[in-house]
Image (cartoon, rainbow over all chains, first blue to last red; front, side, top):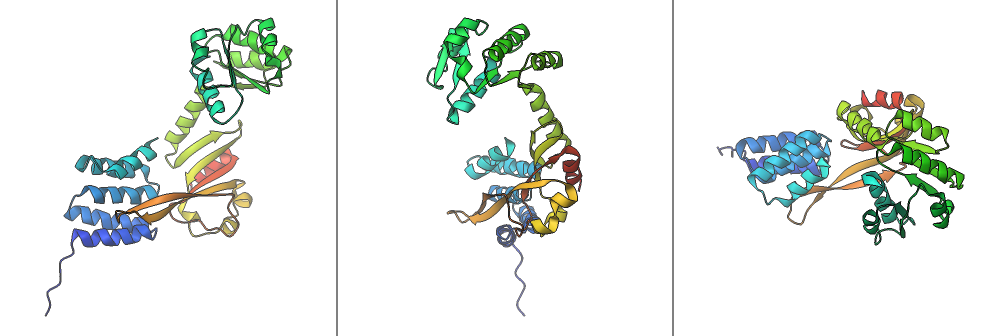
Length: 87
Length: 220
């Protein structure tokens, strides 16, 4: 019998991206949160921010972009989105 | 001219309007020489000077004199006597505004109050992204589409019949994949949407209507 492969952060990220690209933002948020539990990463915080922004949850989106920038201050796209929704 | 007047002049000039800036302070005027069509150093309380400068021919005159109430009243009076078609005046308080209206100001504005009202509205309702007060009874708001509206067409929603508001535009985020292979989105604005257009999750709608009707939608 084959052993079941454990679900990785990358698996959750890919599913989250799938939902995000299909405009299923609530589902995307769930998946990115699961990915972050396994691996806190700037790019995932950024994508979670995108999902919040797309569902008009501005305050949560700002928080996620800030977290992304704390982990990677050079993440230009997070800085751009943060600036856009903060003005 | 103050900060308000300066900003108005810059904004109008950038939109291609022929703007004449008038101030008694040469330094203030010099700042605008490359920005607006004409910048004049003159005392706007001098009727002769206004006449010579051809101010009576302008379409709209905007009087913004900071806290200087007496001067703004005098200048407004002179502009109306000179036959300026539309005189818009910045007032600092209600009494000032009342006097300006009595002496013929076509429109009295309270910029600080308008900004404060707008800010207060956005605090009261975090769902509102933008707010423009059109009149004491009507405004335009930009708001996240309520959950009850998602998946329905404009025709189904019958906003005019049910809520007495008009839908002006739908702002939608269109997901894309960037060159780096990561998601992002572009924003698409559908002005004057058609009856068969459908509202989707994440849409932001712009509505025009009376305060009480808009408020009903905000609280859905």
